Length: 229
Ligand code: NAD
Ligand code: APR
Image 1 (cartoon, rainbow, N blue to C red):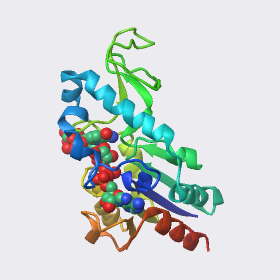
Image 2: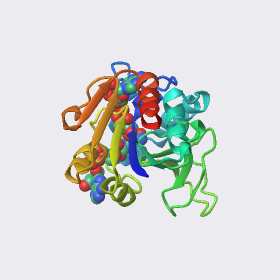
Image 3: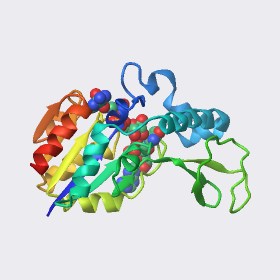
Image 4: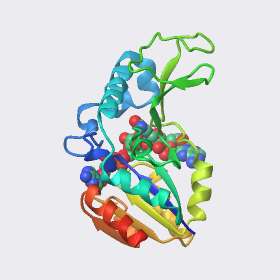
């Protein structure tokens, strides 16, 4: 049974209507990363950060999984391959598309986290700065999102899976943000074959053994059909 580790980024959810970060109309054109996606930004203006993620949460809830999410779920459910999806996305479209084995390395919009006691609970639709933590009652709630300058989740588990994989596939990510951008090199050093599926060549395109370019809803289902053919 081949072990396949699949990294996904904003591009896989683009055709579900969720904005990417670095496109010309991307989120980082309108918002300063330092203001809305760092612990310092949250300390300076928690209301602004909550409004930013409340809007992302509403957009994700209104979106539906697309053919690329569903194809990855089909690859896993088929059972012939051991599939792990490692996503940088904070939406839950992989799960709603049917994937079960998913790691959210940058956290998730559906989670709330207390930055005082570390308690986690399901996020309400709208979060606000003075919301008390249900465990310690302190007004210290934040979205369970990994911000710039923070450690992505489950890195040891990801690297262990990556080194043991028979194939590494990167889908819909620009290859600008580490450590995810380094997975292609990590896989390469471990002798794992690598494939990029992205709208256009990513920053790390040349490090992949093979790269195919086009919209995810076309090229991901086509690749899955090959794997299951
Ligand atoms: P970075 O790679 O510069 O790392 C930040 C800090 O963590 C550094 O001190 C680094 O040494 C340390 N670190 C990172 N990975 C480590 C590892 N595996 N083991 C030990 N130490 C490690 O990252 P950054 O550009 O500051 O971003 C941090 C993460 O937050 C990125 O993965 C980024 O994508 C994520 N992020 C998420 C969102 C979001 O909205 N979902 C927004 C911004 C950033
Ligand atoms: N099909 C396939 N790929 C697409 C599509 C599509 N329909 N639309 C866009 N793309 C590609 C773009 O060409 C780009 O290379 O998806 C990529 C999206 O890149 P980014 O917006 O940079 O998103 P991502 O790589 O996920 O960002 C990484 O940065 O800001 C942080 O934490 C945030 O998780 C995010 C991380």
